[in-house]
Length: 253
Image 1 (cartoon, rainbow, N blue to C red):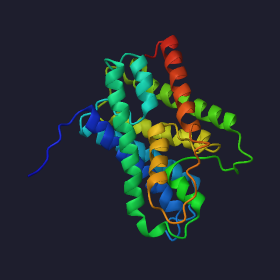
Image 2 (cartoon, rainbow, N blue to C red):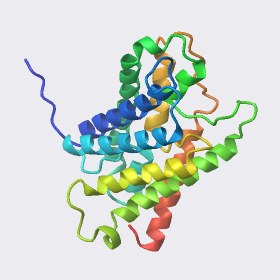
Image 3 (cartoon, rainbow, N blue to C red):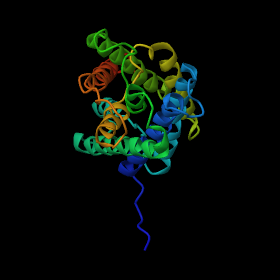
């Protein structure tokens, strides 16, 4: 007996976010885990890997029935404020699907690199799943990190709204074309604003895999850095809400 799933926003957002995390966290794992082929590569690799992780996730979400393909709870919040979703209840279901997808994506990456966790640096292990500043816990400034995440997410949401606005897209792009512009936005954000925090921008990309790190039996792992975990959630949320008010004020949405 084959179980059939009905395409729609919930399935699309779940699988699209799973794809995003598999290709994004997998990209990081390839760079930082012991004996992986790309071990020791550079930030350009990270930026391109995450950019295409988002692009592939959007394609997957669209194909499985999510026309919005947010893959990010704070983008969904901004769009709900703008009236894209019919109710907060509908948006909540989408956000739950995104968060579960992010967790499952983290599990898939753990399985894919199963033989590489042992002997890898514990902080590098954690960095596969979630973000943190490239400073010691004693040196980092959580308010500064919060500000960076808010600023970066403000530009993420604002530029997405610009790309799909009437002034840029007119009556609409050829299906799929807008996704390539989003890929460019993600790459640009990583290259320009990713340095201080690792540019989470997305609770489903950071908190959900962080929870996966917490529960998975990873040899020699460290704590999941819960003291920092609020930054990649509240920073992006504040940035996205500010982006909504800005876009509304200037007539983009």
